[in-house]
Structures are given as structure tokens and as C-alpha cells.
Length: 424
Picture 1: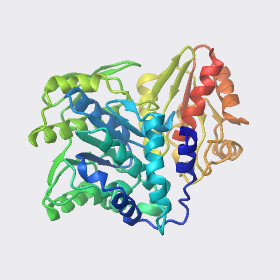
Picture 2 (picture 1 turned 135 degrees about the vertical axis):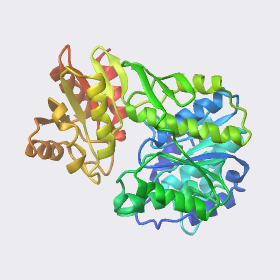
Picture 3 (picture 1 turned 60 degrees about the vertical axis):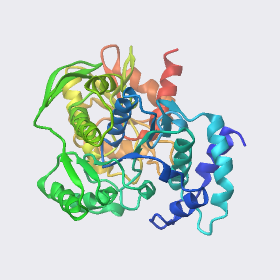
């Protein structure tokens, strides 16, 4: 088996019709000798900001000298991004070795695991083999029945911003979704939450009280933006002054406040993390695909925004960083997303939409998206493929404009590759 075959096997696992639950994951991990039980975790759930919060936390832990695993999804440019140790992606050789070990065990199961469950088990094995001191573990979807929730009580359970997404599975109100996310909170543990509406915070307070879990809320009141440009922002948060962060946007400051609360909790639990580790970790964090400037000439920004809440944050970034510029949107979306409402916040700030079809089975054809946007008053053009969309968007933006890509994380890799070809 080579790396391509290993990834093809992972992607070939059928997820349709699977029943939510932890049974398959637990069965496979048992066959593997329960590698997940040999590790310590920061476990992160939420609707938006999970990945950025995970990346900042992992960066700080690395600066503190801990061998740090990072598990995120989906990947942006290559599969190995999903499981990293000290910033290094899993190698092809390591992936093949673990897939060859896990495949016969998974194939022997009466009810085979889903793709995400399989990837989670591969990641646990990788982190154990690499001798990680701690793993920053991002939930795939929800919390209670997500395959990552097989872990023992984490050092910290973290809940980021809650919004309406995957409502058909997680619930139709913020409170129902919060209750599902709160499933990662375990007995006698520690939890950190992103500040939300009182009713959402009440859900977490109730669960923490029932499980005798210490709850810390992020310090949003102490946030103060000092300066920002297209490459970093400098801010204060409580006792921390002049933190430099290359992740842009007001929402990233709020995510950073969550990370500071997580770090304080880890320090209280005995982890050796200095203030300098925190400053260095924030300054050097990398999290591609989130209001990410991938080219300066032409100015080309890629953002993974893919739900109404993300698009509201994107609007704030447009107002803060792109005022006065002609903004051309290069966008594609999955058919099961609430695209009817998703684009509403950003429409007044976009001069023209260039629509492409995401390379995903759940894709919405570019023609349908362009028709929808045209019907609600926007100027929209459908392109036959992503390279054509990149060329069209650059042409429309002109010398002084900006191409802003958003709508689906699944388009980002192909867009960047097409941009590289276009600007060679």
C-alpha cells in the first residue's frame, strides 16, 4: 500500500446510513489496544472557531516544550494536516504503516466504522506512537456522539462559539446545539467556554454543576484591540498586554481570549507554561484558510467561512480591512448548507460573485448558486471549473480590487493551486 492507496481506502469507507454513536469507535480502539487512553487532551467543540482555537492552543504548548499533537478537520491542502505533531504533518510512511495496521481490524468489524471514526482512530494511534505529552483534539461535529468523545476526561474541555449549523442532527435551537456540544464535558473535569447568550451559557453552567466540573468563561470584557493591518493585529486581554496575532478579525481576538482561559486552566493544573510561551505561541501561530492572504498582487484572500455566523465575521473583516476596495467574491457552497441565508450579510459588500462548484459529493452546482444570487439581487456568474473561476475573479477585480474566496472549505485547495498556476 502507498499513501495514495491509504487515503483512497480511508475515503472509500461508506458513511451513509450510519447510526450516530461511539460503539464503532470504541470497538476499533479496543482491537487496537486503546491507544487513546495513553494520552492527555485539550478537547475542543463548538460551531465556529474550533480550528483557530486549537491551532493557538497547540502553538503555545509547543513553545512550552511539550510534544503536542493537533487533530483537526477537514484538511485544507493535504490530508496530513489533520494529524500533526509539533507542527509536522503525519508523513506518507507513517500514514501507510498505521492504515495497514488498522485496516484488517476495521474490516473485521460487524459494523464497520465511518470515515471520520476511522481517521480518529488512526490519529490516536499516531499520537501514541509519537509519544505526545498532550493532544489538542478538535471535535468533528457536535460533541456528545462525536467519535473523539471516546477519550477519558481531558485536561480541559473547551466550547467555542455556538451557532446554527447541522441543525438536522444537532438541534434546531442554540440551546439544543449547546447541550450536544456540552457532551464533551466529563465528571470532575475543567471546562472553558466562549461567552454567549445567557440561555446558552446556562446550558454549560448546568452541565458543569451536574458533573462537578470547574467552569471558566473567557474574558471578553478585557479585550482591547491596539492596532491591526492586513498581516497581524495587536491586542490586550486582561493582564496580557500587546499580544501579536497573525490571525485577522475581531472573532479571532475572542477565540484568543478563550485560548488564554484554557492556558490559565492548564497552568493551574500544573502544566509549565510561561507568559513568554503564550506571547510566542500567539505570534507564531499558523492557521491557513481563515481570512488568509495568499497573494498580494493580485490581492487574493481565502476564507473558510461557510455558515451565516462565519459570514457575519467575514463582513466585519471586509469593513475593517478592505474598505474602499472593489471586492469580487469567488464562492462555492455545499447543497446542504443554508445558503439562502448564508450570503445575506455579505451581499452589500460584494461588487460581483463568481460561482464555482466545490469538489465534494454534496456540492451545489455553480449554475444553481449563481441563479440563487441573481434572484436575490446580486450580480453573479457561474464558471465551468475552479481554474476558470480564479481567472474570471482576478479579471473582474482588476489592479486595485481584491478577490475574496469563501463559502466552502472544500474549495480552498483547488483555488490555491489554480491561483499558483495563474500567477506563475
